[in-house]
Length: 388
Ligand code: NZQ
Ligand code: ZN
Picture 1 (cartoon, rainbow, N blue to C red):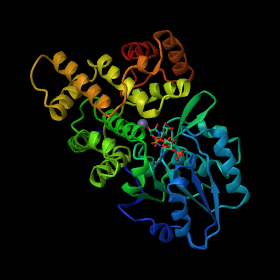
Picture 2 (spheres, rainbow, N blue to C red):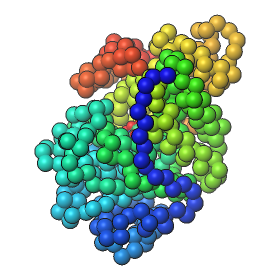
Picture 3 (spheres, helix red, strand yellow):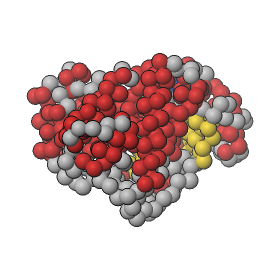
Picture 4 (cartoon, rainbow, N blue to C red):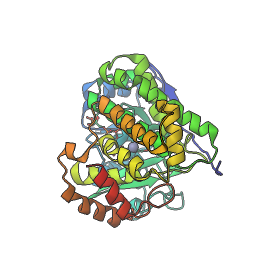
């Protein structure tokens, strides 16, 4: 097992009817800004309930944070935080609203040009850089990103998606009520399952370091997703199936399964370019790229793909390459069973677009991806060709 630091201060309130914890967690004298997305949380009545739980506190609202939240939108909210002296933000939404809120918290009192905060990549932004982060909590409406219990965000600016990481942006608390997610369209539920699945595999299918606990937790999440995936897409009000998805999504990216193991993230970084260039949903980009990554990186990942083949898909006979081929097929079929297409061509993207995607990866410094840094632009090209 590799050395690791583990820190996660986010308090979780899981289950039905937990909104009363807002009143207990948000300081009684706080001026609060509620952030939300394009309106689903208003329509469902959730924003009204959140406001009721804030009681007599002075409350401001900022709606309109778009999927793949944009820098310009978030800076408008940061200005409200500054001018109204907001002391606590409550994010009500999915990954985009929560990520956007993390950026607002960092940018609101930042003294320089807030675009600086997009330049750190996976390096942690410290309190030397952001001296006065604004505290925030979340009410999660979409299980997928794990943003409700991690300190990362992905912010869109111009034609790129930029990771922003800081220990200052762990939510103080997150309310995870599976019932709140019942209103999700099927496609968003399916996206969330694929996102959770690939978060798990990108921390599991690398190379062996004898991290048995982390491997078995990852395998537990993958088995759970395979067991409940189709059910929770088709039966949106099946509480138990949805509860298992919600907790899987949180556990897949709260730092626990990734502690002490190598991490890949090539699929995510290539996928981000597909979202930025073609507007494909995050989860769908992963379903396109991940089977191709397994195929192209089969030599480097051999030992862990075979472990995944045996422990997740019960594949035990045939040559190593036959087992890997069948494993990739099973993985692809699982994504397709949820209603998510797995080829670039399914999204109207032809092979002649591949050079431009590779150029964008280079422009964004994504030239040494994977757990060992061996996914060069040439390897990314090969992955994209396999994903056609
Ligand atoms: O905006 P509204 O009207 O609320 O509609 C949203 C949005 O259109 C809708 N929705 C959310 N909850 C709903 C609902 N509709 C009905 N009922 C509900 N309960 O769903 C749509 C998609 O929402 P979004 O927040 O964009 O989806 P998701 O949670 O998948 O977040 C995707 C973003 O997270 C980033 C992605 O790059 C992308 O920008 N990621 C963040 C990560 C992190 N912070 O750790 C890691 C991930 O790998 C990912 O990169
Ligand atoms: Zn993701």
